[in-house]
Length: 67
Image 1: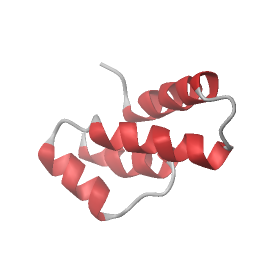
Image 2: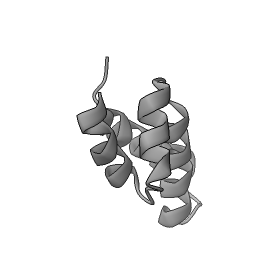
Image 3: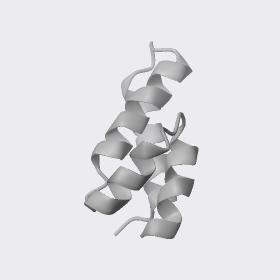
Image 4: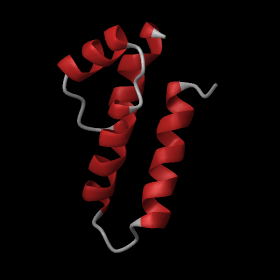
C-alpha cells in the first residue's frame, strides 16, 4: 500500500526511464494521467480531478488528506 507521494515519485521515475525522448512536461503529464486513473476511491478521485492538478506533486498533495 503505497502513499500518494510515493506513488507519484514512482510514476515519475517510470516515465523518465520509459520515455527518455519526450520533453519533461510531456512525461509529467503522462504520469499525472496515470496517477489520476489509479485513484480507486470515487470520492477521492472526484475531489482531486475537480481541482485540475497540473503536476504529480499537486495531485498527490490534494489526495493526501483524503486517504
